[in-house]
Image (cartoon, rainbow, N blue to C red):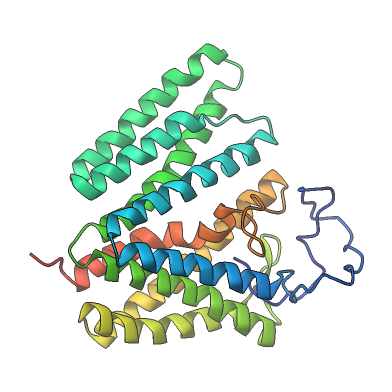
Amino acid sequence: MEDGNQPGPDADTPAAAGTFSPHAPPAGPAGPDAQPSRSGRNLPVAAGVGVLLGGIVILTLFTVKATFLIVMGAAAAVALWELARAFGTRGTHVAVIPAAAGATAMWVCAYWWNDQAVLTSLVLTVIVLLAWRLPGGIDGYLRDVMAGVFAVVYVGLLASFIVAMLAPADGARRVVTFVALTVCSDIGGYFAGSLLGRHPMARVISPHKTWEGLAGSALTCLVAGAILIPVLLHGHAWQGIVTGAAAAAAAVLGDLAESAIKRDLQIKDMGSVLPGHGGILDRVDSLLVTAPVIWLLLTVFVPVPG
């Protein structure tokens, strides 16, 4: 997600419906019913959607935690469809069916089997993608196969670390810690950027990102980590601070990376499934990149119960 302050003209203004142009002029005034924030979000709607999603996460994790995989699966299916549609605007075709099947296989292996099975699932998926594209001929073969591999790694493999966090006996608390830290990065960056943001961090990639917003993300994550790791996982406060710092860095990287993808494809949002947030990928970009980082640190700091 984007920080709340924009230091210059709005580079997210679409040049045409659903497209992005870095040279497009700013849009005209919004209609009387539009109540966007300074970042372009409809903040009340975005907050409502965020609370609803958070409630679903908590409900599934602390009832039958395996049902959280169903929520993840639904989100991943939409995310893969959004990514395939985005690539399609530039003539690149992503094989969604084998990509989704491969992601599902990796998650099943991560939850019920072992790491070697996850790696095997990834390799087999790549082989299937190589074969799947062959009937389409040689024109664009490498481009389409690599787009499919990217989709599997970006959505499937990165998310498998969330499943790996979920699998242990204390998995629900591990996932809550991971999600909360990532959300804190977004919230802290949004409000610090809205109130204080003046200096752009990556104007070409994401003009809403400011150094002040980054500081807000980091501070919020440090505090949240120092509280969550001791309370939920019985770790030490210093471990929470380290984990919070890593979460802030990874979350911002994930946001910037997805913004770079959108600008390269010249689109404004990956989708419009979530009011106030855009598409599923616009919502989970930070979560995907943060997942392996938090999984690693929690594995080191808070050993899985025997």
